[in-house]
Image 1 (spheres, one colour):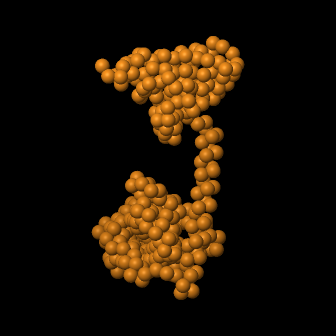
Image 2: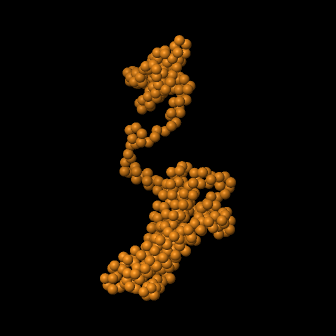
Image 3: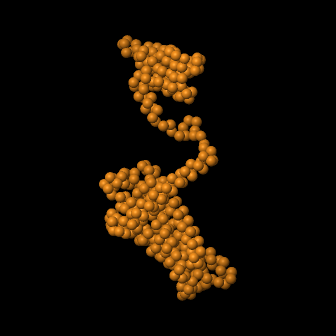
Amino acid sequence: MTEATDNALAPCELGFDRPDQETLVVRLSGSWTLQNKCPSADRVLKEIASGPRVARIAFDAAAMTDWDSGFLIFLTRVIDACSKDGVAAYTKGLPEGARKLLALAATVPEKKGIGKGAIRASFLSRVGEETVDFFLSSREILDFIGEAFVAFTRFVAGKARFRGSDLTRILQDCGIEALPIVSLISLLVGLILAFVGAIQLMLFGAQIYVADLVGIAMVRVMGAVMTGIIMAGRTGAAFAAQLGTMEVNEEIDAFKTMGISPMEFLVLPRILGLTLMMPLLCLYADLMGILGGLIVGVGMLDLTAVEYYNETRAAVSLNNLWIGLFQSMVFGVLVAVAGCLRGMQCGRSASAVGDAATSAVVTGIVSIIVATAVITVVCNVLGI
């Protein structure tokens, strides 16, 4: 049998010294491997508890001949138990390899949800955390809006740096390519409004006022709102996914390194494109909604197309049209800002891109509803 084999089979021993009342030295000798029946960490803990209060422990492994993962398990259990009891553990006397592995294990954070499970925070604690997150998020939103406004002023002054081809492509994506879904949703909304209104108006023999109901509702509010929601789910999510993917691929960092402002080169064309196309899409949605009402009026209420057209023209005023177009422009800005903001805030993982797209849709729709309420109240106060 070789000398190495003899050393590997040498029994492992555990001893203790107390140089002073607050220090315990753990002496290790022999081969601390899984092949040997090594002492348990409980022996060290019993020794700590048996004598006077121990403030620190040290290790002396000068007589150790060999060790493997079993030795590391022993050390980990001892050090963890000492840290819970407030006892400092000094590892200077251990083999260099063991010290490096212990340091490496200490740098890896424990995964949440493993073992005993995470402690559930109290209700007030969760409210406080959500409040802090809300104010931090509000600050980021204000910073982003400020940077976007500065980029827009540079665009007005002719100093913004972005490619015209990008703006043209965005206009196409936000405009003509969105017509099919806008046509379908707006037509169905007009049909629904007309059908619901017709059921009640037929009780009074006032079927002709279905044209008033559909015309005013679509032109003043519903056309802009439905178009905004459609674009939030279609274009706002696309903006967030595009910019989020660029953030993951570190392309935005590359722009900053080259001295190109991502706000001007990436965000500004998207905001301009969607803001310019939203009024046109809203006008088209109004027409499709009125067409849906016309289908119900002619097919269900025995109205002629001329009667429906004349009643719609008499009911819908230019004030209603301008309010709807103004709302659609505001919605375009909100949806574009929400999509670009969430895209720029995206993390550096594939799942973060999906989260950014989802957050962009939610933020855009909530912004549309809040803006609709504010504009409605303001118009009521102004009497328009």
